[in-house]
Amino acid sequence: VLAVRDALSKPRVHDRLDPAWVQLVKFHQGAFALAEYAAVLAELRMCRFGRDSAWRIMANLGALDEIRHTQIPLLLGHDLLEMDGNFDWTHKAYHTNNLIVVAARHLFEDGFLAANAIDIAIQLNFVIETGFTNLQFMALAAMADGADHHVFEKALASIQTDEARHAQIGHPVVRALMRHGGRGYAQYLLDKMWWRCWRLFLATTGTAMDYLAPIEARTRSFKEFMQEWVIEHFMRNLEEFEFDLPWFWRLFLDELDYAHHSLQPALYSCRTMLWFDEPTPSEPERAWLRDKYPTWVQTYEPIWDRIEDAWERQGEGSTLTYTLPALCNLCQLPTVFIGPGNSTACSLKRNGRSYLFCSQPCRWIFEKEPERFGGHRTVVDRVITGEAPSDLQDLLIWMGHDTLESTG
Ligand code: MN
Ligand code: MN
Image (cartoon, rainbow, N blue to C red; front, side, top):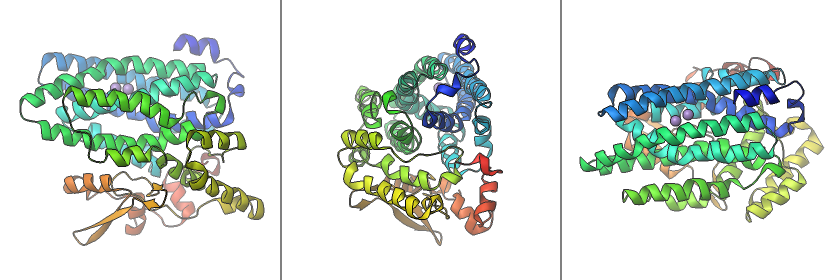
């Protein structure tokens, strides 16, 4: 990575990158660089508390890997500062209460930090690293190649070589857990983490791949990557241990066609609350989306027509939202995963208050562990309790956007 950086990071190389691709990189850097640091702490916890010397040694090496995975994006983000000051969000994002960052942190704290060594082996190694990191690092690396961003491509591919190694902690731990009657426990953590990862990765990787990558870099659609790299691989893991398919599998498969398309207009209209920009899809991109997602033309294209029409008639201000979206009390994302003719949002009353969820699986996870999740406040909850300001300008500052330039 360092050699490629030396060869390719000369001044002006960045100038040739597609502008939407630059936003994709900025999104990725902010959303994932310090998640790698959370993984350092998780590996170290297994290194201390894993109940087998092989496990502890693998986790020790895993912690070294994850330190590297934190440092590489920080270094690349620092290089990119000269092009765009918002690359400081590579390091800054996880130190803010930006609403997308809160969602990412909520998942990684649940999966890595507020978890014991066995939970970590299942949630981080078995589910995330054998499933979703392929998407983030192999699929996105292929796209980086197509976008001629070779330093980023090498960084991603290099990270995945480590992930493939320490991901192997998961299988022997699951095997041992099965021998000791832990099947139900393992199945729950697997179902929970699968759903939670699906939510976060569709919000970050799904929207980025299908809306920010230049068309010539889109070797596959997000759905096709999910089918090839994530679902097939994960199914083999399930079969190996005779796990059941998660109960929400049908909903998950349906959502491949719409969930990230449903979130994208929300990201677009909330772009002043993000540290990167979002474009409207161009005509060639619309044609690509219609081809890859046959229902997109009826369900989502009219939304973009209305947005473009509003801009033309009333100016850019009419394409922005001036309130926070309703947020899910589990995944913390906007509750906008609306399929054709169907909203999946739902609610729950508990101890005299209402909780809102984007979907049945998020409510199910909450109900399984109400003590764990019930006390956490979404950004909207914090506005209501007075912990966060209700004026949008002040709220943006509270979320880490202290200058106008630091927003999308
Ligand atoms: Mn990593
Ligand atoms: Mn890892």
